Image (cartoon, rainbow, N blue to C red; front, side, top):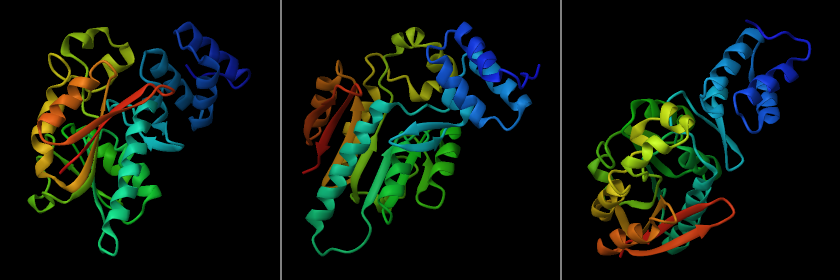
Length: 270
């Protein structure tokens, strides 16, 4: 059924509110702005009412003031990951200053990239980087390629698998939002995440830190001397993430932003 033109915003708002959407009015306006016609609007509203994340319905997510393409099934960038971006930018600035008169682009990697939101913003705001992104999920890789276009290279692989061996020891900054939800906690996640985002982007193993430990074990081979890893974690898990990276020989510290509920561990290679 096509939503009638008259009072369309009110109709959409009522349907969204009845489905439990907390910000029904705002969502209705976004859907109305994005829909090409009445039939498309009906499809989008039906998808949202069925529980699909708003960003997947719209086809984009707001991230650090930009729009990032988000396809169905792909992990939706959260605002808390903007802390990963900010710390990566700090590390980039420090790397640029440390190079002095050295030439050539700085090599940067977004690991477990999903839609590559961090890499896409870095590409837009810091042109000229040797920018790479990796993910194991083929849908995420496809989406990341749309976001990066010709400004970086996206490869499919398990962590560092798939990257050219020539990049070993070259990355000045590696940014990562690797999965850190404990397996037993997956069923308690909101349906939007549990049903509509890939488990590859959520499941971090028994304690949530399987991927963090693997990254800690491997990242030293890929970072340049003095290179920085910025790894998202949770406040509850931050100490253990930091310990894993410190045990691997990196200088690690926890950075927290309470306003956006973001927590990262920043780790520097010797």
